[in-house]
Image (cartoon, rainbow, N blue to C red):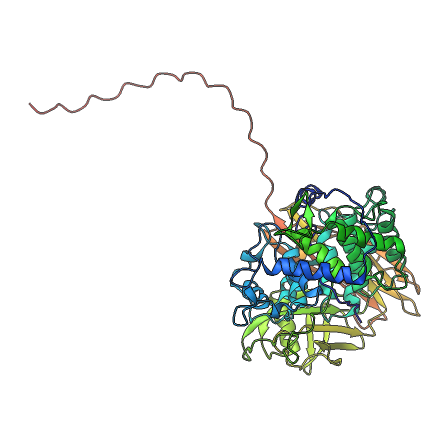
Length: 596
């Protein structure tokens, strides 16, 4: 079960920016001052109430908090929900007939063009991640906002081998991707795969940064407070206990960054640190909470304005700041990133808004989780009619999916799914939105249901990856070789008869350094093969690498993906010297005589 605590989701800046420079500019430092005394529970409750009142005054007439301008004003809803006020009960001027904050955000998220709620000029994974976290805390169903808006299906387009967006440039997208997944009812192995990505990118000092850190050089660099708070919260929201080594090291990192005043950085950073600690159970009143931790709360309350028009707001450089207030309100009101919506003001009002009615046969986005039973589940999405069977939805994913090549081969026998991308075993099982597992195939998929497939008793002979993504590659140029290991986990030896490339664009891939062909593998032994990619055309390309193995009923298979792009144009050359004058041409014929 995913660990959820009363408190809202993510904070303002890091999930929305992709560089440390942009983050530093967006979240200016607040001078550190020490709290005059230790805060009581009553002091904390009063601070929360005053912050909510300050935000009430800023609600627009349409019920929203305004449009995005690089930082999403809807982050305020997370702090407000963590304070115990349901966004469905938050209406301009307290007018019971006015549009609520919940309704306003639902309208924003379901407009035809999602570009209107992107944070920047181009869509990012964090746009979908923010919306999932905000929608969940606001009492909306993220997979059922409208017939065309399934937030998980939108986020699925960015999923790559447990990462979100990029393995080379940004890491906060993956951190917040895990937070978003944790807010939904999804199989634990899917969350754990991304949690392992966080493990692999943890720095030597116990923290994380907003950029990937997969090697010893980057892991030796100093971590930052904000990324560490978010990553810590993501691991615990996904089910890791406080005793987990990565979690314990992250907690120690944040505590080591506490100044004598109690601050852990500026207002935003201190808030994110408290959220990460709180998500892992280190919160006021818990056994793990210490007197030193309490000084951080004291310091944060001391930064709140207590008089004038901005009473209740948190200050940055002496001025009220909406994003700092959203962060701090969440930290003192709930101290968490992923939370359930609060109770309604009127008992009996729906805590979770009912999904809209969508007729059978309407084509809608569908999110899928496909787990071949080897610890490498994947997330993807397709479009299929409401009420279509699981087998039909998989067939739709074979034809078109986000990301591409979600399903490349599908075997259905007697209405039951028996093979996906060469993976066979004891049978494919399906679970629809937390229901009981059943043999996959004939089940109708309802509106907004997530299709979670799992292979029972997978074949013991398999590659160490079920997918190999090469990214973008110039047309006609060979990529660097990527190596795969074929391992025999069976109790008896097997022989690798052949390796074969096939699929829609199998000719775009080449085998190199094949140590497997003809090799007999003893139990627990393996062999390796390299693959290179040279796209023959622009756009998404895919293929299959399969092995024919004696003594095995199935063919171990790896899905190969990549994208062809045009060769980059070189810079223009220098202008050449002017040419010499050419030879004089021959005299032309005499023209006709003119009229008298």
